[in-house]
Length: 119
View 1 (cartoon, rainbow, N blue to C red):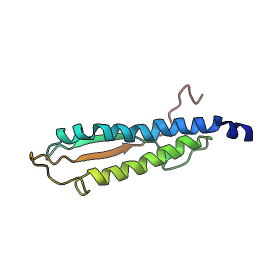
View 2: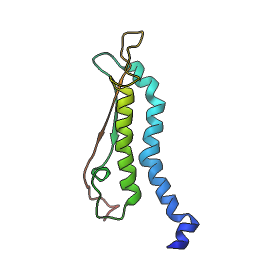
View 3: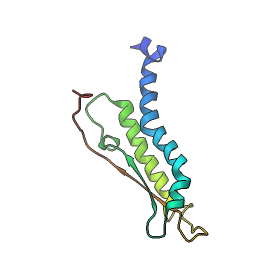
């Protein structure tokens, strides 16, 4: 096990999970933000829906440390983006064209789903 840590095998799995579950949603949201703001209207904001997990709030019995940590971080990122992009955050001011340009950010948190990956 110590050799695996030194060789980077464990880090690859950790990094891959964080790349997929945390970094990708962040960079995608950031890239789409101009379009989301342009499409926003006073009564119909732009919307981002993150796919979290209950394990981001409550740990599970499986040895899925990277997954659990990535989903907890995604829930935190969701709260941060919701504050920054929503109506009470620093980016919630009115735009010149009359649309608010605000974006709501929420996460859903599905529970355990048995799939081939966990069988």
